[in-house]
Image: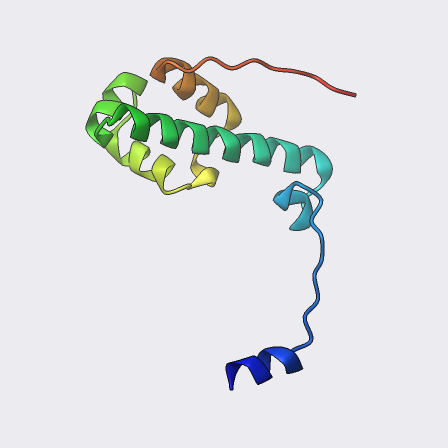
Length: 102
């Protein structure tokens, strides 16, 4: 029965732009900043996981509270500016390199 339903469905595929925030309707400049923030949050979360740090240990190393680490790990992007994420990454031991492209 499932096969028949799948055959009858009108499936449409829309290719993304490569930036989900552009696809969601943000203007290009804001979408780029949001993508950088999301990428930094993912990198920080993975770094904390790979180091096997508890949230309390990560908080101490980054100079923030444990609830802020929890928000970071949950992806609460609206809670963190790009500047703050860069600061946290540096405090954790990550180093970023900014590359500009035309």
